Length: 283
Image 1 (cartoon, rainbow, N blue to C red):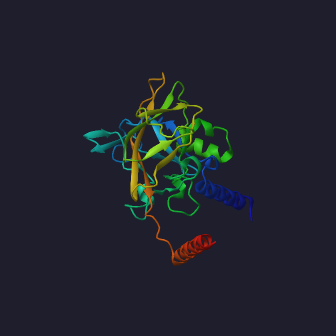
Image 2 (image 1 turned 180 degrees about the vertical axis):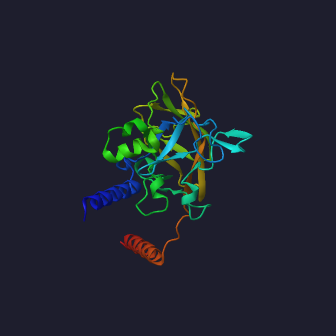
Image 3 (image 1 turned 90 degrees about the vertical axis):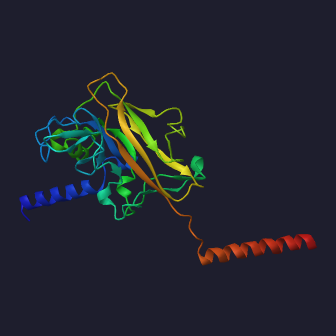
């Protein structure tokens, strides 16, 4: 194999690896917050118009060697009569294009343990599970990728450094715009970060890390539970503006019906208990 062929094969393998695993998945982080430095729409219906998302906080999904902007500001209407929208068509997680069943392909919740016993909770889903790539719900600043690794640098500098600009003087806040009844968000020792208000401070734009757990009580009805969020600037840099709205969808499963062998074991256990009780009485 020639040197050129080896280099090409190495590059393709690198891209393949980047596309299949996030830079900080091992830490539970699959999303980043940056600002959009593109001042003008580059292509499409609204090419040449001012970018309505410029200098706005933007939620970015780690897609290996590039980002997906989630719920960024956008235009609707026509180029002659554009209307600014505070979200866009790609504003749900998991992303709609990835869903085989649009109604139910949400992030599956599992039974909790420890402090979360008695609840259905979010977690990193096993590889190959539906929507597993979206289950790394931790968030961090894009600046955390700078110099982290060669793979992270590819992501950090993707789209011609559209998202790599510093945004000093910003404290990133997560604003809860709406949520299904019973759906709550925990972080660290705080079991309900929105219990005292609709905005939760994530931290400095250069250094924050946010590892949330979404949950509902285990008695919650089966179905899809959704929360709507946006990113806000709580700091002193007034040039950085609020981000667009996006949703996260979670699925509470229907309680499983015990299999026949489970019923048999249960019956045997009850029979054994009954016999033990009879022996104690006769004694």
